[in-house]
Image (tube, rainbow, N blue to C red; front, top):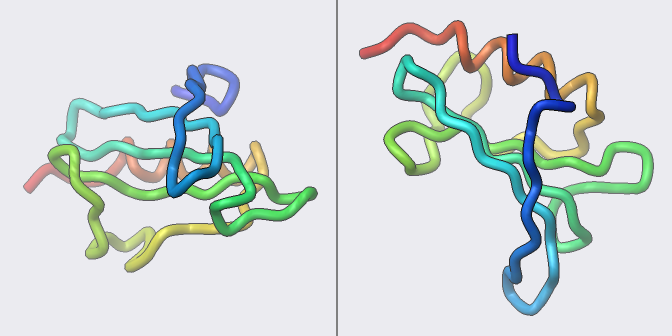
Length: 90
């Protein structure tokens, strides 16, 4: 099972802010984008924002969420990774 510690973060610029982003695609066609940076919905104690992806695009119609998940911890991210990996292929 993929865990937060398995993610590889890269720096990139978004709207003038430097952020860290990791992306992972699962065999079921879904994936995640995990970001850390002050541009995103984060704070000091919950520094990550997670988006569910499908086919490389944002996906807003899963049982996990209908939006981007802000204010996540490393443990939260690991749980989201598990849940996305378990989604059924269309």
